[in-house]
Image 1 (tube, one colour):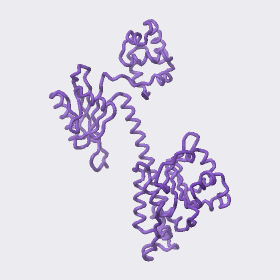
Image 2 (cartoon, one colour):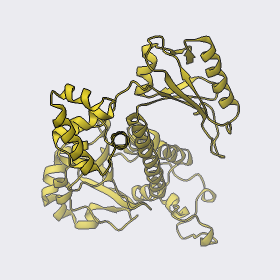
Image 3 (cartoon, one colour):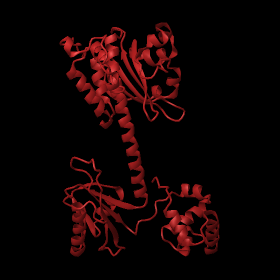
Image 4 (cartoon, one colour):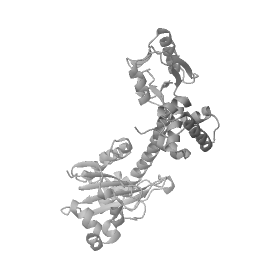
Length: 412
């Protein structure tokens, strides 16, 4: 599909190319000038739709897929590409393409460092829109190894793009491609890219912040999982929004506590009344002090430990269906998830010493651990002395605390 560029409705709707803002200090930093919109001749409704898609990009499963696809149609391109992270010795590039068959994440040889080593269309002046001919010349472009290996097979003749750098130092590249059957890029096409550039830059910065927050969330969630804590998150209506794997295991067991009608329910009425009261208090008062209780298990195993606390809201929080209460579940019967290999590396233990240390962390006595490992008690004692020497602790209880505090999960 090719969209026809509309002419400006009237001279009063756009700024003449020779016009400048009355006060340049009032023009928003990084925003496109009125001259850009005049040159682009893009309809306001079309531009608004494009910018909306760009700012929605960080929330898409495939970031910016919709906006790249929109631009592909808008600019009569066969490919539109956003490179969020050029390839390095450590990482492949992070490339999002909108091609003839739709948007997709680039994988394979083009995302490798080889392609980026060969690419001559690099090192563009920041925030400046250029064609490949302007940058390196048409002759050099069409005879380059990069063109022959990575461009020509995809029916790409014309290439327009810009490089941008975010405040956190990220290097991003934007490229629009046309086929041999298409026309060269015009000043109008260049103006469209200039108009969207500052918005795409801000959108990428938002994506970077969201990614940072998500990385921290995963880190903390992983730490909670390694502590063998079950977490149950309630929204403001008292309905369960989310549970982690440990909580799922506990609730599936139906051993004293379970999920019922979207909330938690204890087996015994006295405990259930207390549980519901604590959850209700936490929902009604965000500053309410955390509460703790135990849940009896009909199986006779050790009681679950339960803690209930409100989730404080940011003063700018708005909307509904957000976390309001967190319930933590602790099963004393759960064993440690520490990794023997990493425990061994962290404390420079031998395989036999690491195996013994983890059994002790799981609650076994030295004699029980020796039997489980099928070694003599004197051998176990010798291993323990060596473990004490390497870890710097002198008591078995201190060793258990040290190992339980390890940050190394089991990948099984």
